[in-house]
Amino acid sequence: MSPARPWAQHRPPCAGGAVPGRDRDPGTGTPGSGPRDRDRDRDRDHPHPRALGADRRPGWARHGELSTVPFLLAAAPRRATLFQALARAVLRMRRGQGKRKAEARELPRVSRKRKEEEEAVQEARRKAAPSVREFKYNKKRVRLISQGSDLKDDARCILYWMSRDQRVQDNWAFLYAQRLALKQELPLHVCFCLVPKFLDATIRHYGFMLRGLQEVAEECAELNIPFHLLLGYAKDVLPTFVAEHGVGGLVTDFCPLRLPQQWVEDVRERLPEDVPFAQVDAHNIVPCWVASPKQEYSARTIRGKIHAQLPEFLTEFPPVVRHPYPPSHPAEPIAWEACYSSLQVDRTVKEVEWATPGTAAGLAVLQSFITERLKSFGSHRNDPNKAALSNLSPWFHFGQVSTQRAILEVQKHRGKYKESVDAFVEEAVVRRELAENFCYYNENYDSVQGAYNWAQTTLKLHAKDKRPFLYELQELEQGTTHDPLWNAAQLQMVQEGKMHGFLRMYWAKKILEWTRSPEEALRFAIYLNDRYELDGRDPNGYVGKLQDGGMGGRADTPSPCPAGCLWSICGIHDQGWAERAIFGKIRYMNYAGCKRKFDVGQFERRYAPRTLSQ
View 1 (cartoon, rainbow, N blue to C red):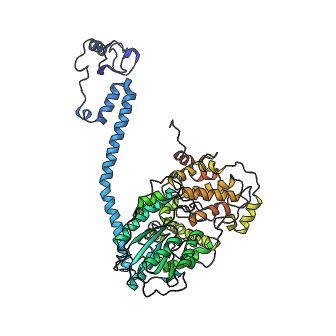
View 2: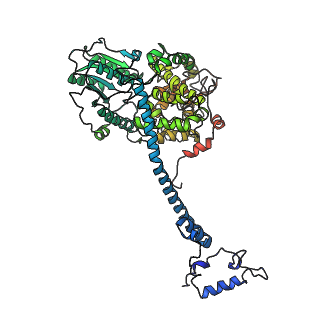
């Protein structure tokens, strides 16, 4: 076995083993015969300390892995692959250490800033009024559901049945309930009825909701307000709770969808006649039944009505304060994990990591939007590759963050970002409340029968048109169509629980193009949206235009929405366009149009299916 070659003898390959530009004969300039070559031959037979690898590098090169690796690479090219891998690993390690140190330095600053922001919001509430008792509450937000309105003399408490708006502060329903309790000098209780399943909701949705409710329960405890998690449908558990606790008045929040409205009606029928039952629209800025008494045709017809009423309703909230009247029945401890395990929902759709549930996390997202992305919202909200959206739709959907709070905070920056603020108000207020209006006044909000007559007619005329591609639900769900952009959008929704607003339109319109009928297209789109989107089962998912997209101020520019299934497939709140196959007069979108608006390839690469080789 030949002896190992000394470390110093590893040199870059050249003719005759010479080092280019150095191992040349001074007289001839030819490699292999100069004095350095003779020294190299001598060293091979009689290695000395320098040849054996004594470190002759300067001090700056001898300390630390990062300085050693380049020296080794230059001296030992035959081991370059190994050293390069080592270098990359060390660089990653050092970068990671640097990043962690930077994050560690940044955390106190971020925490201080977040605390300052929270204190500023709390101070704004206190300036509005010390408590809701001293606040001039607008009773237009409230409507009486029961026949009677007088509290019974032997009432022992007031109950807020929390349903859609799952937060303590910035909640007009919670505030109204505390107002009643303070006025009557009664304890205040809060309950939430946890149903084992709800439409196509999965563990992704229930997990987000339950963790948010856990935060609500903790905040209620700090305010001397018991929070009760009742397991079962409201009609079965709420009347019993009312009787056992001597509830003198019941308050709940508002949702325009059929099933929640049915829950409210079922409870009303089962309540004792002497228990008044009130409903408060704590989700919309202008209460749905106040904004308009009828179904509005488009954003154009409702925009003026909403803006005319914003000065009356877009006000600062007073605080929910520590309740001075202690309860006679403390809340039972809640076994959150047991509740989580008992749910009868699909657990294959995993929870997401990017969105932390709860009001505190949602308000942090709001502040990050204002400081980092609001400036770009006006110009880049239609580009799926840009970080310009608010990303607030999950917290809005579960009522963990108030839309009104978001508008109050965003409007403070109108002087600096006028275009962006105006666009955000258009989508978070006008478009969102237009969707609420449609679902409230149109019982067919999730079917083709809910579309305008012109849209139903044109879709029917083209229902038998030949489709270029036909896909089954499973193929769509797995993102295995011929269209890489559509697949990427679908996979984004499956993986992250959120699809970019602009692509949600394209996504839904292609389902119309690739399925057997408009009815099947709408059914597939609603199913996929409700199953994977964190903000599924929402008026905006059925029809609306949400804060995560934009109109761009032009009538011919589509408005991204959280699915907007009826907008995309049935033309709700849109106009008729040039007639074409399959779509009829429904607005058309295609791949080429998307390529003109943003870098399609960049988005496709982000969500392309990964193979084992990758």
